[in-house]
Length: 452
Image (tube, rainbow, N blue to C red):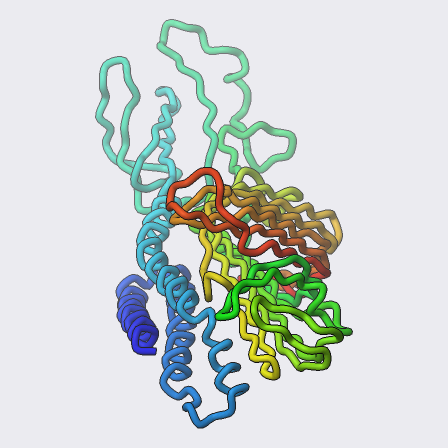
């Protein structure tokens, strides 16, 4: 308890310092209020979660409380250390990234051009200014032999990219007949203006969050251990009349730049079964008789954090979006079996464990002229031995979307996650090892997607 409390308190202190820093940035840089506001909101949410973890750790039930209450409290804190570390990592990431986002936003906003309109007897010569833009500059020019005239731009800002068409005349050439015509009026129809505006496509909102419910059917097997030895448990033999569990399905994407984003995918379920044995079963050196009561619990969560590269699309007018991403998978498993009548108590052989592995994947979406669309995401782990453990996991999520407004859409689809968790005797061993758990969850997903 002491180590957990120190971990939670330390993470909360770091998050509080980050919260003060984000507030200071928001006040000192009002031009980046949108980016700093999102970072401040995320930091505030993480800080609230950490404060709740500290309170739960300090005010837990004592030894005089019923066993089921103490067991429920311990299960509620099962993923707490992982949540605290991941939350602190997200806060630190926001601290590092927000200044870069503000700098890139300013660079994009000041990327303009400057153009000087010449007298009739002089050739019009366009130039580019790296700091500001104007349509007309009246500043003095500095001529260089064989080069362009450079002009200092006026403070008038012009945010759209422009295209300038021109032709050189050195004086010895006869002016073409096409220049003898009346001056071109860009506002008249069927004219090819010398100055043409090409506005960029409006980008999507920077934050996309999808939250939904997963009606999961969980199958597989896992190894449990205890004082009486070890057992190999099949989830099918532990199930009662209920064949599915209500899980959590979360996806999020935070735009870092127009071409990159932070990708998050999460799925989690919890199984709790209680009943009576239908026949006598041997659990190692302990034999449970038919009719003995038992309780079984399994907690399984899957988290994917990655950096995404947007290949195409991701604007309001695009019909096809595609991105590829690479990052890390952070999973958690904990299983317990207990039969008080026979004294059989077993749990995961490696205890409450977090699993880590690198992963890659892609995300794509299709949007038609109407409100309907289609989304597909796939993630695959790279099953390498990292510190004596490895994950072979595939995560597939797809379904249809229906826009309810510009910022909210309905998602209805299916998700399938299959994972094999292995343990090795040596941290860098490539062969051998044993399978600690072989799990799969599948089922329909429904929820809401938000963009803001």
